[in-house]
Image (cartoon, rainbow, N blue to C red; front, side, top):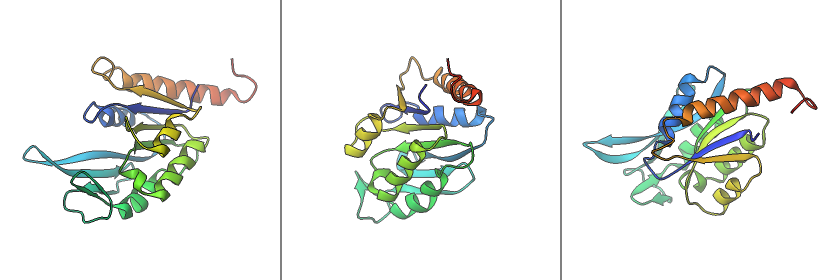
Length: 182
């Protein structure tokens, strides 16, 4: 079983909604972050990062002045590195929530290293990853320890429970110790 469980799919397919449902039902210690769109009058203004311990900041916003942009959104490298990065540092046996490994986050070399450290840790990582992506994103997708589920209209309602079952099975396997895996 692969301990890094990720979702992918087009924008607005439900990836973050699934992550939030997993967080709500997890019942285990967890750390990490998820992203949400900020909208006003039906128009998307930017993207917020929210950590599981209550910190919030903009990942990107149309009013952020930055050397890094995706379409009309300026990306806040400072917020990525001071909010997202510390939140995905492996801690105890916590499940790490990593929403998302995407083009905006990958402008930060510090974030890319933190994401790699999380994936390399013994912690279970549940996250999202963009459909496309550059070299780093492709390297993550090609790891032998990552399972990627594409979110579709047909499976998005069943994915939260599927992920929770996978986490439970991974924990049972861990508890049995080395040499006892069937």
